[in-house]
Length: 202
Image 1 (spheres, rainbow, N blue to C red):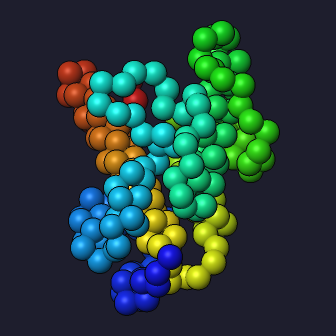
Image 2 (image 1 turned 180 degrees about the vertical axis):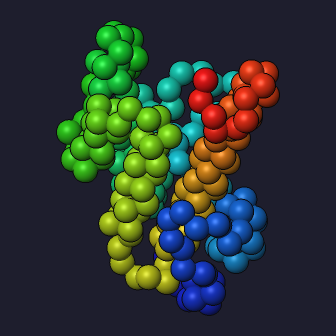
């Protein structure tokens, strides 16, 4: 496993919720020419999904354990995400009284993944708030799982995952803004149709 000192030293520090300094796919393209072939191939397979689906494949991508990748960080990340998704599916199925939503009994470990899933599924009524809670937990898990030489491939893999999470957060913000716009537009339309000034109750 080689050192990527120059590449890692150029990376901008990331904070959850900030605008991503670059798109994840652009970062992957940038790294492709700077990583050795084996590490570049690992980066190409890395996603938020614990086991990314292949073309034409159906069903949950997390029902089975992923085959070892050859990288401990990626394997531990996939285990964490799989535990999160299975626990989330189980508790959401219990909450909605569905019997078919959880394909596999979730593992007990990693325990923090299970705890986050339960809190998101049971304790948060707003779906957007639940997704943000889950993504913040993913962010923290990436930091915890990252160990060893700071200038090795794991930092690059972690950075890529964080860029994916920042892109998701941007989508959440856009969705929240769109919902707020729809609410305001409906309010304006309702007041125009009722011939009442905006802000005056019926």
